[in-house]
Image (tube, rainbow, N blue to C red; front, top):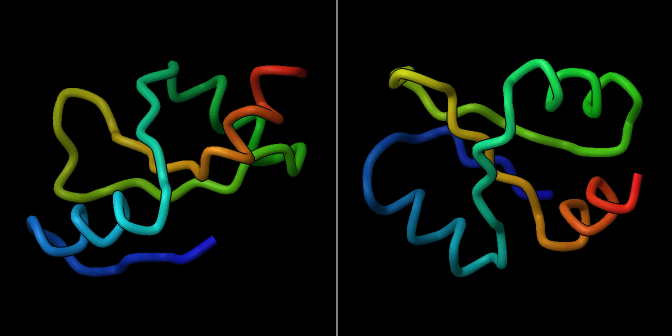
Length: 66
């Protein structure tokens, strides 16, 4: 999975172009999935009310199946 370290509109557009999706699942669920190796995720800063995670479509499907 590509990691985008910048902020602003350009990285978000690049993420969409790379086929990444956005999930609003609870942070604890994502942390558990990341620890288990089911999902690779990055958070986008600055934090809003919740962190936003970008997860590839393939990894999202794996996460939903588990």
